[in-house]
Length: 338
Image (cartoon, rainbow, N blue to C red; front, side, top):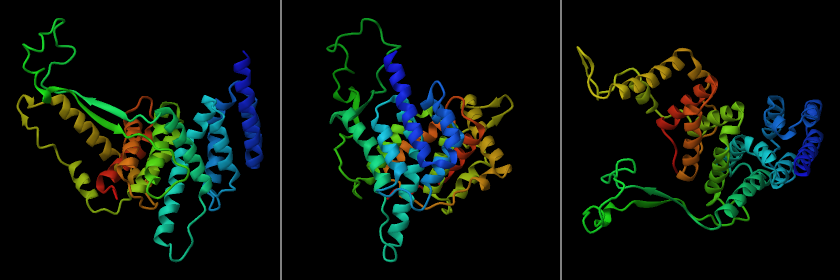
């Protein structure tokens, strides 16, 4: 009971402090603070999200004296699980504003000085540091089984010994072990060489809790992903042409489709959905208008995981699916990787 009340009291304190930073929504925030689960109510409040988004998008936001960035930083350090979810909810916004301003300034560095984005960087670093601590200097491995071996569900209970099994004696038949994520090194500042890795880790933290994120946060990430990839690549038309053609792997016959009809039907369903989005004009509505962002693997990997959830996850709203389709087509058309 003491722990439960302490968590509520801490959340109410954080929300009341937030209301002093966002006076235009102080009445809404006060109402959220009085709920039974204030942190959860703040996470699921579209009005609070809109107000915080507006503040983060301000041209003066992200500096070392940005009080909202300080609030996000201190809230994550509170170690309360529900308060941490609130901070993670704004990582797509914060990452996009940070990357777009960094790359906008790099193209005009001779004209304007490098912007002060220490506030944004502090929030990204606190998430990165939490992952460094969680990994304890150990890389994340992935095991890829040798496909010529029978699966777990087809092997006998008493498999033959290694001496009588030529597959087990073959070193190439052993599972491949690859490094999914190398050991994370502690970082005291966001260096240009480590920027993609730090932002990517922050996005990975978001992905780990994505099932608890509200739909408007996912929608913003999808729109920002389309912005990062841009849509000025002429190869985008290649994918559009594909949606008007049937896959070459299947042929029609008097008895239906030859080959894997189930796979063919799934492909046709995806193609038809993309046609539907374009026919409604939603493709133009969701078209990116932002700055083209280089997407090395450290950024592209978590971005694809998030988009995969937004397209195939359970209980995803139609507007999120539509924005995800546009983002995926943009990434296909020409993802910048350098």
